[in-house]
Length: 126
Image 1 (cartoon, rainbow, N blue to C red):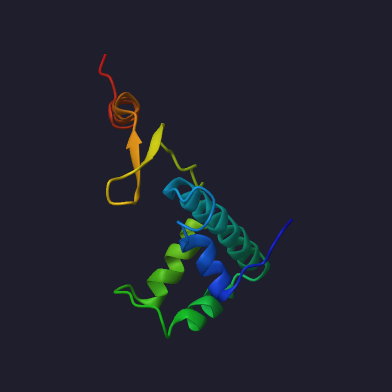
Image 2 (image 1 turned 120 degrees about the vertical axis):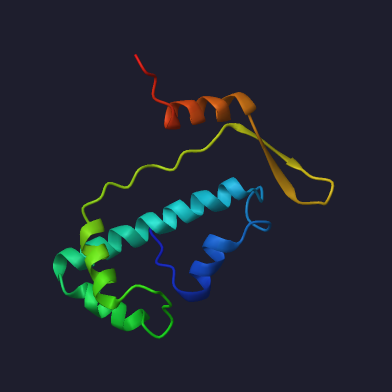
């Protein structure tokens, strides 16, 4: 079922951890991805329907937006980014454990981290 979240409901969806499900950060990050995918989809559809939507958007957020970029530069960046591919978020295998302080801790599989670093940042030379 599709639910339209706004205001405090949206904030609770993306920020709450302990009182939802198992209380892991992994679950919260999954909700972040779900929410951001919906925001990206909605923003893209509004931009495609009306290319000047980006101006309306920045006018709306201007009172709470703080940036060292000029408005023109931000608009140019949005227009450039609309054609980018958004890659999936990568996660490591591991396990969650309740720490001594009562907070949930994630313990990644060390071998998977090394494998990811090598495959992501290392290019073998022939």
